[in-house]
Length: 459
Image (cartoon, rainbow, N blue to C red):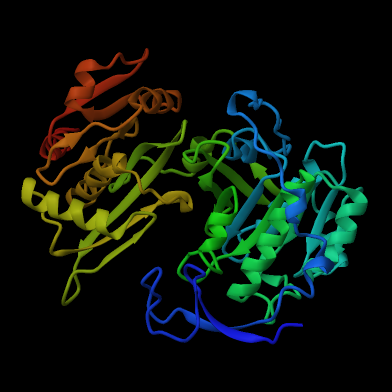
């Protein structure tokens, strides 16, 4: 057996160095090298059963002979998840599901196991909970997965025998940070353990043709825990977002080798688990109170799905010292840019005031198309003049105060009209070229000052 040795692994990129350095030479991050004890891999490589030997390597194929539909997708039974994945799980693929504690990762993983449409069994490996705890969570689901195979295990090598015996179509690991391998002499959750465990599981999934779902945690900064190399080892990276104080959850794909990364899934957390939301705009605007200053409706676009959200702003007199800026759901830099544009390009004084901005429903808006709606909400609150209840706004605002076009205006306008917002403020070039749907009135806005003058003119 090889003598154990120590290496220093980077928690950001996973790079290894023979000695400690203040800065990682590979990714340039500071103070990220952590000592890891690495033992010899030769004594346990044959025990794991999760490795692929060189004798089993495949032969090269001509690209023209490969059938594109050779690996049909397996529907998960959750339409919102299938939308984000691009149609379902691909056999042999590796999916990383990451999110904050308590957001609903384990619930979603258990619902995948309960509703996945497959004739082969599904294996649920739990390293954080006991089998009894998994059963208690499963009792709350509408479709009880009675045939689900539950394996409480934290050792990667122990998964080889059940994997060969049952040949599951889907293997769910909750979570990857709790697993450990005999090939690495370090604590579970360390850089070396996470990387080695994920590599062994991914190789086994591709060898057996099973879809592998890895549940991962995120750090307090919002990044996926463990080395960034883990994101490069998997095929799909899903981020589960949401405020635990709100029932809404958003599922986004930051990486997807089998589909688009522009789609988003909307879920609602209830007593029976996660439920897909087909019309998120109606739920986001269900409790909106019309006639209040500082509120503007903005049609956002998440992938191919338009969603209407309410941006709220409150401009109040500054108590003392520097004016305060607080925003939820909107980027700080975007808010600072809108305040500067309003101050220089219009006659609305907002720099000397406290400003509070919120996107109702716990939604986070990072799209430039929300600039015009944010500017109108700020001006409405400062002037104490509410926008009409049937008005929405969409457009990007430049530093010169000009309002620029955004993508897929037709989808945004149709969604606004469908929910009763018949007047939409849009960039003037878009209005000149657009063909509005029946019942829609498109209001041309060339500059943000024009939008403020239109707001003042409203009765």
